[in-house]
Amino acid sequence: MKRKSVFTLSLLLTFFLTVPAAGAASSVSYGIPNINVLLDGKRLAFPDVWPQADANQRVLVPIRVVSENLGANVNYANNKITIKQDGKTIVLIIGSKTATVDGKAVTFDSAAVVKNNRTLVPLRFVSEALGQEVEWNGVDQYVWIGKKDVPVVDDVIKGAPVEEYTYLFSKHPNVLTSSGVPRTEVWDIKESQLPIMIPYGFKKDPSKPDSWDSIFYGFSIVSIESKEYIKIHYSGTSHIGIQLLSDNGIPRGRLKIQKLSAKDTDGSYIEYYPLTNSGDELYGDPDWKELQISDVKYIQLLYDSKNYVFIQNPYYKS
Image 1 (tube, rainbow, N blue to C red):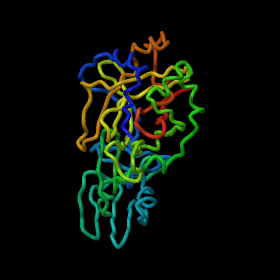
Image 2: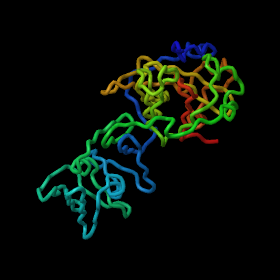
Image 3: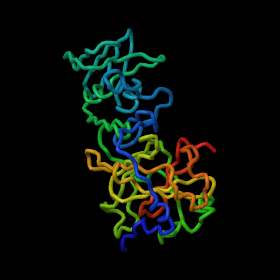
Image 4: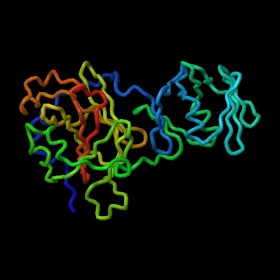
């Protein structure tokens, strides 16, 4: 099937053409604040204490992450942490930047600490000592451990009937199918389920990878010269738009601000989309300047996929 560009959303072009210019000043981010750890591409859960950066910008994690997810045996007594796995032994002392790995002294620039009755250990040092590859990505505040096998959306969630979401388009119901592809289901994705791979929806062979397959890593809200933007990080196709969906039934289309766009070192894309846009007034919102990120229930990614892609906004307030 011929690829159908999502930018045939003709009814949205009226506000895409009114995107305001933005300066190139440095940005201030106040989006998803937590550091997240991914093991073999899957995000780890932290029910009580989140990973945190110390004064040396090294990530510390609760010790049980090591024992429960890296498969190591951990013993903690008298301020000494002993970690064993597959014949390898690591010994750390709380507050010390010297440890031993299989009896050999090693000096590093972070120390294990106790905070709020939780023992935190330097993630990179421990993971690499156990033979894991570790990579930091500051765009999303992700620490990647091991393989980068991002889960496919179909393996994470099931599609929900599109009828459950039509209220988000009640003022302009034709926008939902104006791409010419009337999909029947929605992938309703939680922010905690990111990153996630979204396959191109019109493959001849769905079992094979396609250059238009996309990985959506995450988003945050940034302020640039006192104007707010949604910062999106993804790979795959380099041309996506988004829609901001709210309870008032007015879908707000957005295109990226070209001058702010960039590429990460791995070739993935970092794009910025304005939170507010004067074109919203043409769609029936006279108070478009008052839009807050807390008003946005979903960020719809305009991918050429078999289902609609809705990302839940964790800052939404009903």
